[in-house]
Length: 190
Length: 190
Image 1 (cartoon, chains in turn purple, cyan):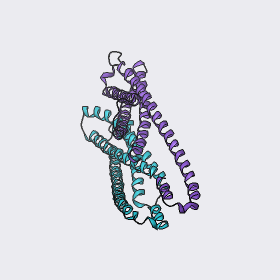
Image 2 (tube, one colour; image 1 turned 180 degrees about the vertical axis):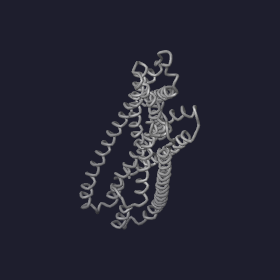
Image 3 (cartoon, chains in turn purple, orange; image 1 turned 180 degrees about the horizontal axis):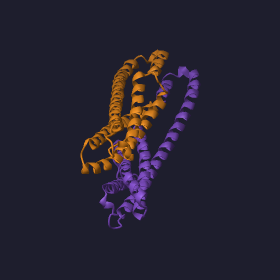
Image 4 (spheres, chains in turn yellow, orange; image 1 turned 45 degrees about the vertical axis):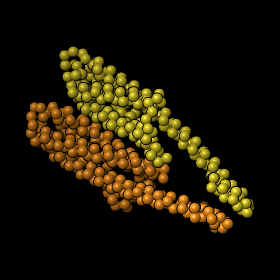
């Protein structure tokens, strides 16, 4: 814009061409402004979406952690007799910590890192934690299935619910990972 | 560029300013050309990297599939008695098919889809298949661990090697998913 303005000021002999120029630039400006506001809206939506996904993932992992950790009913019905449930518990704790810190970081806006670094951290963190979550869920399912064939009591039910909660946390984090991948890309180029 | 050239042709009175203009634009052109070639090189490297990752993932999943499918030694030592190994086999087949078709598609350059659609397909496909692979590996590990505590023969060894192969295929596909995420982003904006 400034360039064309400069040229017109320097050579007033080009007056007849000016209206045509203006006509061609005005829709361009209108288009770019609307596309920028559209982009802001989209990014705002994505930011909110990511925050909501992480918030729910935090809640679900915390619940999964509490349910697994309190799943002790004496004798063989203690979660800590089985490495699968110990793994499920460990990953649920890790996921709750990660999503909690991330949600806090994005809400408070105090712990501000470099934008690029922050986007990278979000993407890699979401990816790794979602791989760990699906892994812990898959490890715990066969054992639980086997137990539920034999009997169906509070121990196996608690395990099954903790597994489902971790699975939903995985779904949310996988969505959040896609959103952060998208954000990372916009950070890199614009 | 074409804009400034146009202006000079229209107003030759601005001759003294021309050299300064040229001086200021030349390094800009040099910079943008070098940045474009750098970008081409980087994209070429990523394309090759993605192809190599998928090729190796294809090889590893195929090996995992063959080892699991031939893991039959009579009595209880048949892979198909255990749902974990059936799941491992199914996902190894799926992963071999997916990576094979993708590698073929990118090598042959005959099956050309719309660029944007193709990048989207790559990203979502890589993500989903890598989640499935880590899930099948995690499901098969506890059972194999338990069996190897009791005894250590050709059946458990084959299972363990199939699991390792699937795991390495997962690592490669996770890398490929990151590369396709990056590619998707460059497709969207440039």
